[in-house]
Length: 305
Image 1 (spheres, helix red, strand yellow):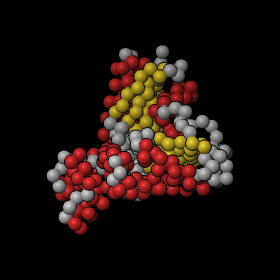
Image 2 (tube, helix red, strand yellow):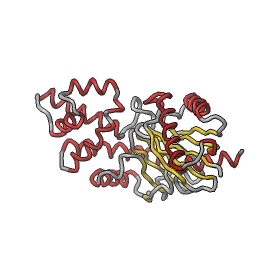
Image 3 (cartoon, rainbow, N blue to C red):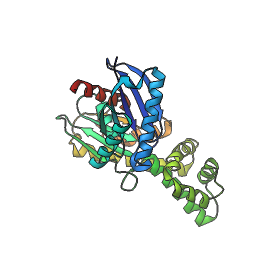
Image 4 (tube, rainbow, N blue to C red):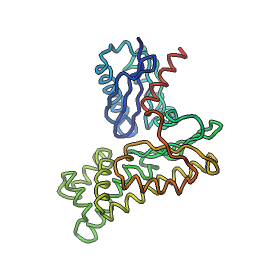
């Protein structure tokens, strides 16, 4: 029996699916972040490799039985980045067929056929879509320097910025500010700033659950941040629907990423704004996980060979 590996990697984690050539999922695992723009190519390779080893060990098979892999990784949209990642994976997994694509491509692969838009809401943010003729497009997904509107990274950044400005203006901390300092274990804002400067990805996206909890408890500052977040994410969908000319007909609208399904309050606010942005959209789920979609793409590598 031959096997394939599928990876869905972003700024926080890497999901891995080990699949047999007859399409059965035989093991799943999770590694660290694998967006080379955030953790470097070495860090991305290490996370993918760790996830692969865990899945192979869990299944009790030999590494040589894996014949192909597909890695859908954030941060590989530029051809040069994709080529470098493929070369590194080829060195790490010699003799195997390898395909590298973006995590955004995996989300569309995970939908059913026909018109669809998938909103990706995680460490980064983007929307990717397909019209009835199969043409695809995306909005967002440019990283925290040029985009990521409404992402967990942006919510965390805004939360710290708002709390710091309040402290500078009044000399006191808001309830959300006190929660941030307490949960991060830092005595003050200068210490937290130094920590953020040293590694923003290790701090800012991880503040999102704190904001969710504060909002659930009625904190007005946290709720305002989440409202801005929901509006920004819905605008990605609206812009993409206009670009693909999907506003006048029905299409599938699905969500994926670590920001959703964690808070009833936020999920309701996000759905409210998404329905305003795309009133004819049919809300639904991905038919498979992005990592599973990557494994199916790896199976196609075998078929082509």
